[in-house]
Length: 76
Image 1: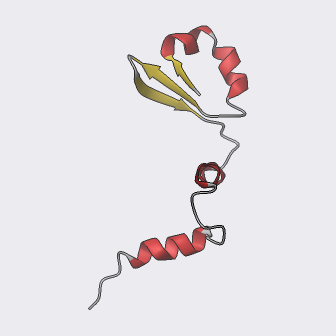
Image 2: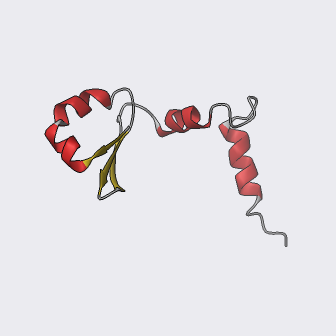
Image 3: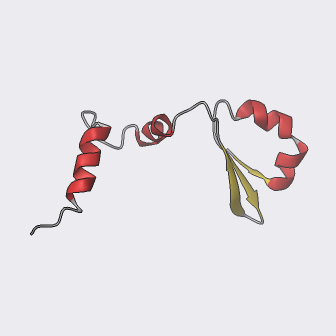
């Protein structure tokens, strides 16, 4: 969810309750200046939710890590 800084200030309690379910992006003059996240949700779970349906179902984080590291291997 995206809200203005003024809206966020005026309804802080409302957004404290909402952050349990979704991240809140706070804007000022049309630009995102902050992101409020639920500290009880791991970053991996959050990213996995964002990537759902965009990566192959059999892909796991270990294979992605190996693929990424392979790009930086230097041949002697």
